[in-house]
Image 1 (cartoon, rainbow, N blue to C red):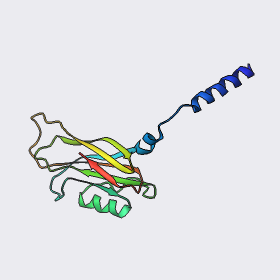
Image 2 (image 1 turned 180 degrees about the vertical axis):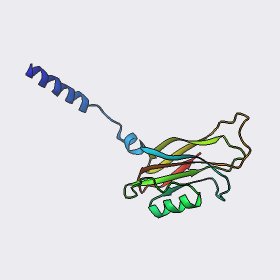
Image 3 (image 1 turned 90 degrees about the vertical axis):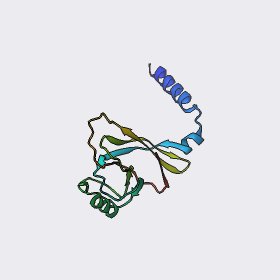
Image 4 (image 1 turned 120 degrees about the horizontal axis):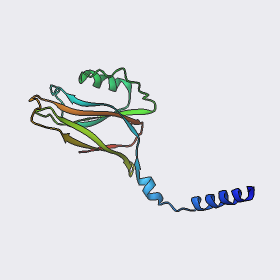
Length: 149
């Protein structure tokens, strides 16, 4: 029985380790882990254009929290190992819009943030100026970040 187990374990290691992997795909495209911290709509009073930004320290995070009037200073963040990404959409004339993070990848040395806009308009949405946003944290990287809408 012991010999059979050793034979099976050796065979498994041989075949599992012998699998060929295209290393260029692994190096050039990698899904990154993230955690959504907040998502919603701002009041629309902020004088900010559609944009994405990367916050790499607590001061930047606190400044953004204050300027957007978000109560997010109590979030547990480790800026030694994490960075916060903020995506703000264009100003909307009604409520019912949101942003969704479709993918976060590392491709050819560039972090790509792919965001889509969702519209859940059903006729009962308020006529009010809003600005959809999404805020998430990810592992801290020195790579450039590209935002795709």
